[in-house]
Image 1 (spheres, rainbow, N blue to C red):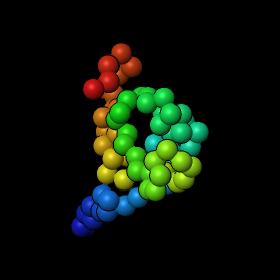
Image 2 (cartoon, helix red, strand yellow; image 1 turned 45 degrees about the vertical axis):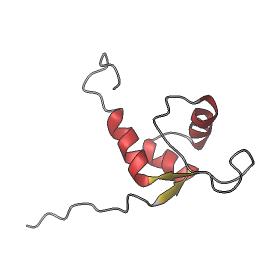
Image 3 (cartoon, one colour; image 1 turned 90 degrees about the horizontal axis):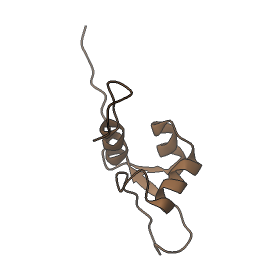
Image 4 (cartoon, rainbow, N blue to C red; image 1 turned 180 degrees about the horizontal axis):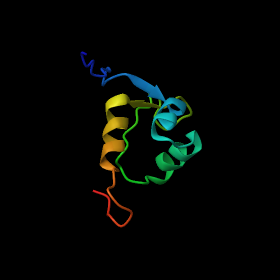
Length: 81
């Protein structure tokens, strides 16, 4: 039996809905995190065009995976980071 590792393009851009699905959150939660800067500057995003205007937001797949890993816990009393 051969094991095939999962491969992905770390620079693949996910839209808000795709990133939210990957994180098990709602798109609205990611919008709130962007607006409030929470739960950190831990999940970078990319907004092409005018950064202050309306427009689509994207997340690099590698950043979403890194964010998930940084929030892993072994038990409920463990502090993040």
